[in-house]
Length: 170
Length: 167
Image 1 (cartoon, rainbow over the protein chains, first blue to last red):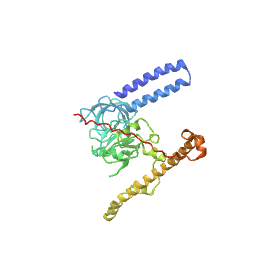
Image 2: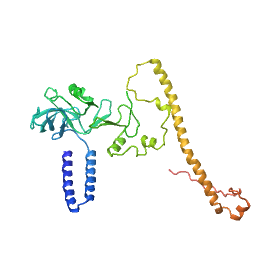
Image 3: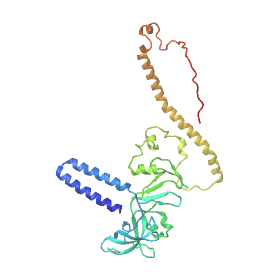
Image 4: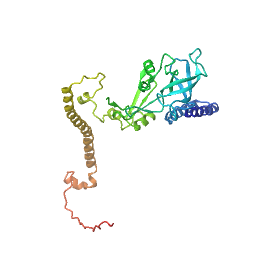
């Protein structure tokens, strides 16, 4: 939800600044635009991160064909999904001729989450974005590749196949 | 157990402490506490923040080159356990840390020596330039020493009564 708010506010900023730019015309307006952009990104970076809940958009980091998935149900937990949890999602964006298409309801494992999660030794881990790997009901990945880093906690969650496919394990 | 170093302040992170942030290119940033994590989020450069080890090293505040640093090293190959060797290492640790602390203290005293001589020279200069404030020029001509003659001054000392604290 916060992400959506951010995008909305940034778009408003852009339109306002665009109007300013047309009226002023010069290098100054461009510079101002750049600074405001930076400020927005800072706010975006420092916002409070929460659970992956209904309507959270997640990046799909495998080659199943889906690009973006919206969470429609977090399994197991009432509050929402954390790193390593399984969710049910609806495919919002997909590449043509993929294994899944837009509108499909799919299962996915959260392999990266921006909200920190405690590790077994008491320290914490957090990632850059929210990302998911699509799996079938049995928990086997649909795609054949996994991009980017994944946490080693997936082994505990019995997703060894994802770990084997992953490029980096954090 | 591996003891990692904090990305921001270079202090040791003991198991179960701190937070680690994994960027999308799989670079891991480890932080010892929320202070360091917050500073990272504010996009501060540890070389420009005065309390970090990086700043102190860069500005010559701390000892950087010493043979005692050789003992603490990242080893990727696990050592085969050897009881005698381990005992020796455990015996050596306090000695090494003692030597290290001594050398670090020496480094700081050496570093502060420069300021001490500088201050002395400046004080001498000031004394020479403004001796006329305390010694008349005619008197200075007769006796060209910068020290003043010692004079006995009687100090009247009255003891004030101290009331005991009321409860």
